[in-house]
Image 1 (tube, rainbow, N blue to C red):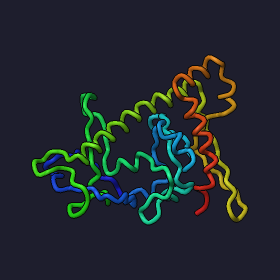
Image 2: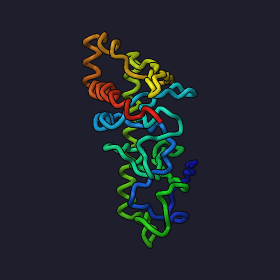
Image 3: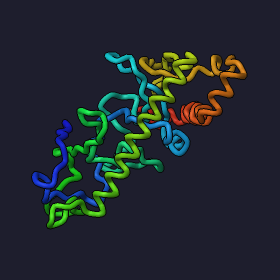
Image 4: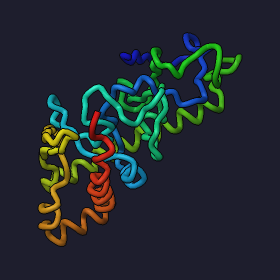
Length: 230
């Protein structure tokens, strides 16, 4: 299902409601989900965390791997998320945020095609006076927090690239039939390069809070078995 994001406003969306149940069918073909660095620690036991590289911008994005098969998600069954940790990307649905043209104000958008939206059931976004309900106010705060976390994540990734720690890896997986399958386009922190850093560089990573996130990323790779197979 293709997302159709439009700016949220109290005229066009005055009757919209958000269903209370976290219906996530729209993400069932997402084999990777964006993460922010603040999620690494709580997420490390739920799924593998790797880095994907945007071929256009050259930027790296930490992601949760939900399947090794494109257009597949092993953690969504019948529209429900099955893992203990729920990524913020899912919890923020059906909303999105981005800066306005002046880069000074945060704009809130909504995915009109989301199965989470209804005019018949759920929690209202606006009251009879067109004002934001307490539910929407809380969502806007959460969206703003996620936006701030994304900016901090960019700084974290820059720290990794400044020290040349992100390296391309080929993941080799043994299939049930005994055949091996290789998966490219994956970036991980190179442990050898990490250990070879100077004491000064390691102290910098520690002071920036990057070391704990790095080790959470590396520990999460133990969950790779969860995304193998059909």
